[in-house]
Length: 148
Image (cartoon, rainbow, N blue to C red; front, side, top):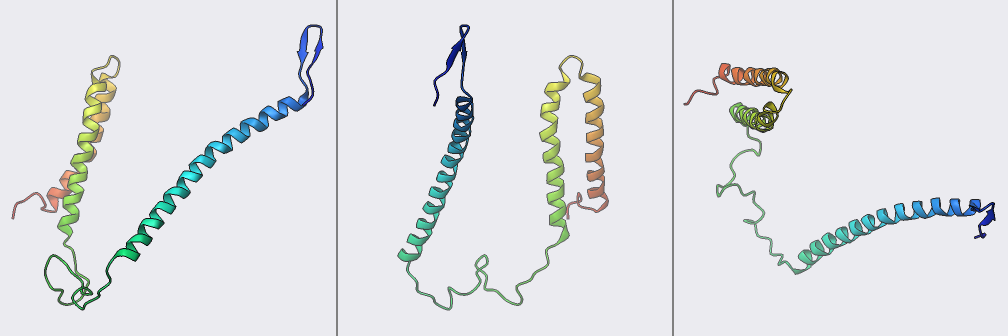
């Protein structure tokens, strides 16, 4: 590295030092990513060693009973494919409607009280509740909300 020269009480730094500082910044940048990469490799090795140890240490005694498909204590009968009733999907749909509703209502209530946000947030919330009402109306039309 060349020494800086002094001209009229001003220090003039050689161009090499500017290039070196940019190289140092890039080296520091990639060094931080190398730490993350090394941590990822160590994590993968840890998982591989755990699976390998499990495979080496477990007892392997296959029996016909162990090779059967087991589902809730009932012996499997018939084909493996079964139809799921649509009402379970609709229950999940209703859950999502009310979960999303509650997720957005609580933060909205805190912003609604702030100055200057009252009317705007009130209109936005009624639009949002309108979308949720359409979903609820759909579930009502499908007969999901009736107890059987």
